[in-house]
Length: 308
Image (cartoon, rainbow, N blue to C red; front, side, top):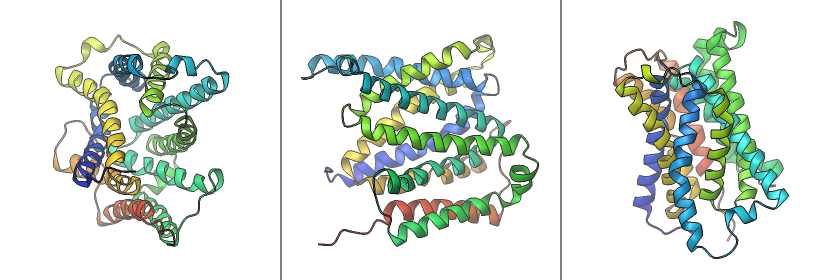
């Protein structure tokens, strides 16, 4: 059930789209000095440190078994660990891909993740897609091909740094799909906040041995601000997303989130950012981006209404 406060829900979903749209730009700014793994460690660590007190405080006033008591079940423990490691791998693959490609390309490719999750529902959850959703999938794939057609040589023939970056982000989308499927099962036993705080700590501990703190003194004040923003972005964007789901239908939230790549493209081309490499904008690439976004929205909103 949703609350019906659709204006508030749409505002929250739009907030999430904007935050996710500017996130790769902020990450690019930080990675001019810090390596990708150290940057991601700080994202996980800050999110974990900020969310943990809330979870501990809430558990004191909650009835029933605590988070730690439920995790004593071997089955739930290993499910949680596997999902956390998949999310950690997703973050690692995404930022390693982002390091090698552009913010716009990264956001276009990562849109594959919700599409793969939708398609996986056919086999895992026995769901069926409507004709409009299949049309959206075709539009999405066509848009990807059109957007990357000027870079066809880089991605598929030379397989240079740019092409490797695209492939890493594509694998990140595939790994995220596995995580999201496991998350669906975990949410039958845990709240979304409980799962996320565990995932953040798993990521923090996984990245800690590989983090290099020697370059921290070289960060400028702007980069420190961007690093803190990247950590807060994870919490605020996810919180806005979860709250939006309580006020409007999931399909409408997904449709608004499909605008994320356009927000990235618009930001990098309207606001000059020193040192940031951007995709060359042509009628062809814009058409490709529009097909990706339109396909994502059509797939999210295209579910046939059940017969009455």
